[in-house]
Length: 304
Image 1 (cartoon, one colour):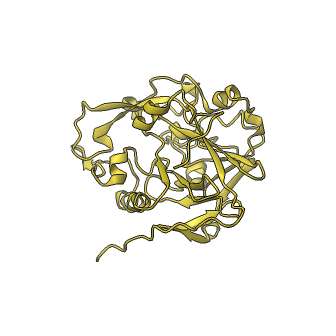
Image 2: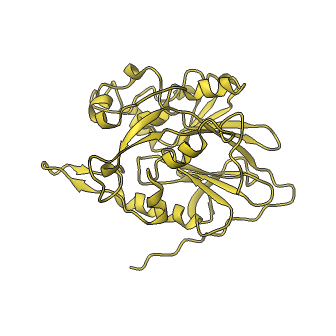
């Protein structure tokens, strides 16, 4: 069956259009082995990558949120299987956590109103404790992962305390009640077209992305989480790594390769439209060009 070409048209701004000021946040550094994420890479190809997180503030109301919390400083708090299973990927350094990045920029983490978690992998959940007043927004499928996580299941890499459940909002299927551009399932978070939470299946159950306006005149940013770990997958230059070991165990960065490939295809469609900046959580090229610069909080990522 022929693939349906996704619509790349994003809605034009309304008069007095609200938008989001988006800042990058440090979330730790980890090595990524390219043979795990890019087809045809060698085991010796290892790159040092950020676990990028983001601070978003509404241009008119000042409402704020953080997207992802990166890597926590106390690595011993992770389930024992994490350093064992991800030995090749464990952090190189945590010079700054997300809460420390906010503090350094003059914004106490306890004033963050919401934390949107792209998914429950260890290098994205960080330490929720400093965000003591925030509502934690996650995909609905995350609930079963949390309920069956560590320590209930000693072999699980998902922590039952990944997020504070008493302040959690698990997005139901019905919450994704609109479409935007190439994405058929989206939530208009503020109800004014300034920011959309995107249902982005493939990497892990409940995986979310964010599509936000970054100006009143038509600029956007797409925050892709772990939908892809290398920008060449978005451009179509490379394909997702997928193999099996001698025991038949499938080796892939994504829970569902097919769903991940479709999400990547939809993200790639954004590159054909004007003024859309696509940024992945582990984009080492962007990070190396921008670290320590004005794109990081308290500065903002420039609009296209």
